[in-house]
Length: 494
Image (cartoon, rainbow, N blue to C red; front, side):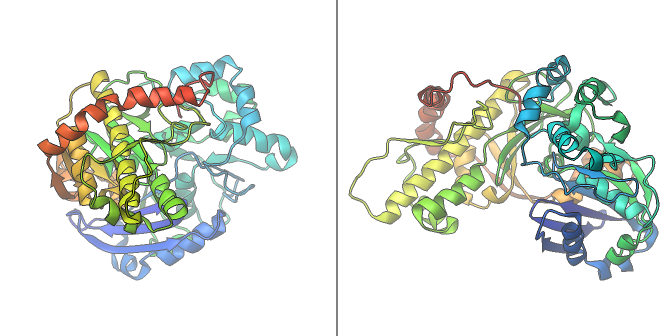
């Protein structure tokens, strides 16, 4: 069994990654390629470029175990042969009119009670939009699938074969409309009936890691994956949670990338407007708080407002004495206020006679501190709902700064573990456990995960930031009132 090779494919929005490793977690072959357009042809073009095919071909067919990570919320409408009837419907597109109509149905309210809110960015309103605008074309649709499922079956079926008996994992199906409150999640059929979308277009629901079959397509052969064992993967967010080490009840992790997200493993969900719950790929439930686009905001502000690179801005920020920051409040559009008009805000900025480097550094460092306060808010929220956590694991591009990690640990008042970004490989953890390649979750984590740094809180920094931190949410809520949008509804992000 030690000869097995785990091969993960990450079908992202801007790039595709392919990684392979042995059961010791040692990376053997990796590839990356940019996606130049949101069509399946461009996806495959990038996939072929990214695949370390020569390395993968050298593995015995029976040793290759393949899984796919895909973008959450993106869907494809395909015909009976798996060919797209429409271009991929990306997660970031919107159908506000159709969403408003669907939300009038009692089924939408019932689904929201089960953890899935209907919004303009939800997949179902966008499907309804396609169905209305191009009714005759929509009649060709046989399956509604996620990018992850589409790619798995593109490897499984031979060209020209009909796609039959499709399945998809719980995590990729979630935003489309799944009742995860059941012991075994099911499609929430009433909302599809109200939307007049046939439930016959929906694949069967299965757990992440479920076996699909052997890769038989020409595409599989081109990638070096012919006769590889295919397994259902999961969404990128759930794969990141596994890479974070959110594996056992009480584990908490923070994703510090383009968008901030905070994950927590629990046995039973506790409803809160700022949190939604996936069925955990291994066991229990995975609470998710999806924060604003903090990383993207940092990059945009540095380049567009300060006129410097983010790397230069970080170098300036590192020189600023802790405690000299001003208040920065991240956008509240996505969470926890769900207020589309609520942008970022600064407080305490003064036209003092200082160098450009000092002012730029103060602003950027303040943004880092405000983001850390946001993360702390969610950590405390999980602790209030569930239990106290002793350590926080972090992952993503925002963890590359050692001084920001020390700031985080001091604001959290907890030990912080920086995790290696092994999202692609960790998505195969459920499949590996299902195949009994590891004795248990603990052994899988020990072999596949990597901690790159451990950061302890700094008592002096904590004392400087504690009062600021404790007043952060109070002030942030007041800023929301200034925006004059108190009538906007707080709803749960699906």
